[in-house]
Length: 327
Length: 261
Image 1: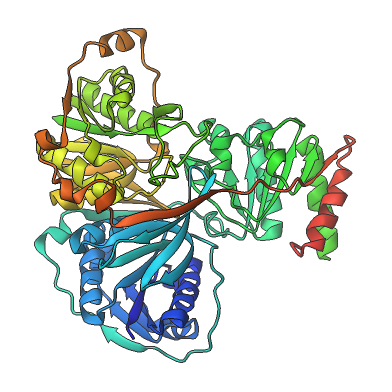
Image 2 (image 1 turned 30 degrees about the horizontal axis):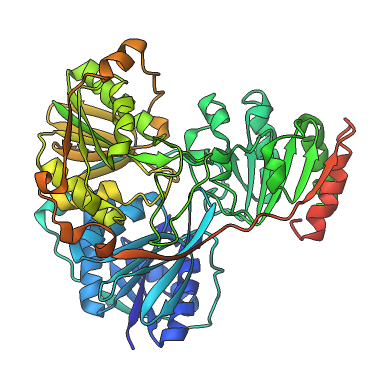
């Protein structure tokens, strides 16, 4: 019986949604293998969240409360994780499929000879190895991937692939990692952090509901309507590449093959034709609503509910209807 | 200043992709291939370094001979030369194997900066740039939405979900770019013509010193075991609005019945 490690991705001293989902994934794997689940929190603020992590299934919490985690790029985290592997004897680490975390996994894999699988939407054990479900080619093909024998396994978990669950566990055992950074760990320095997202909306990659706008909006003012609809639903706001290229909405909200991937329970696309390059970023959405003037728009082929019509007639009416029903 | 731009040949997203059921590798020959869309941005950034810093820019592509037109396409944006690593032993490499091959190729080149795209559109693994940096023992400044070179330093605005970090490192360094970084130009006619005669070195794994025990399908640490086509989605309910927005009420009903409100 060993330990499965989960690298907790956090922001503003709170575990992100994906972290609680990963703990659920780890618990699922552990119940089959008889292992225990250990969370790893790198950076300040570990003690305040220990109970939350325990409640979601972590029986141990490895910590390294160093400012170097945010002061330098990637390498301090890699070296701390090497220590976590050493101390725990773990063979498996789950990590979040977000940009910066993938870099940590990449460098850790090279350093330790581990295998890496990213963006898993499912995971189970077979003969001691994790078998991950993973989509490729813009979601067209669903694959199963696993690892070569005898290597450490780094598994990146996709947003909203697992459901966070409180397992009713108590406070985890806290173990401080003794990390002494190598000189090269500080080669890339963070000189400042610019926070640009001011609205209190969920990040689209994590959001349960995503409202997206495209070329059909006609101009950037259309996004005010998208934001109104989103805020009513507690949703994140995304955009097609046509809209971000036109400068109507920041690039970070672009959903598509060269932008971000979203996997919400509900996606509402207005004025978006649904070309394959956009679908590649959202076609795993469980429910798709499309509103478009063009009855031939490809998005209707993946819509669970579609309205052929002018979004400027439909969306304000939808907002009214939703407000009424909300009461 | 010397800059290298690794580029990737990928299946056209709009084309039909296949995985060869016999060996479970991507059947890259049976489908129309394009220069990975993100490479337009990494190439543009390199061209700007050429224009503003007099940088010499070289394209690097790992791929079969049939990928050569992609190399010429990359050169047509105004880059100086290219190197293509072609070898059957590289086929079916996983992301780490690919990174080992590319890193070996880079070891044989002089460079101050290597500019990758942040992720390729086919597998979207995003592992290669940082893995290459680790193999070479260099800093990885990835997801750049802004890049500037100041003497022997590179400064990058590294994008994340809430904004960006301003990060810096001493050259040589590895960077990757995101779409937000620039507006790529189209190749000029002159560039397209000139690309045909720009120097293109084709090297095998042995030429470059790639350890064949570390690459290729047999040595992959992450392997594909099964695949299936995504089942086609069941047709949904499509209604036409009469111009008054009245269809919104039906949609609201649908949303309510599924507990979205």
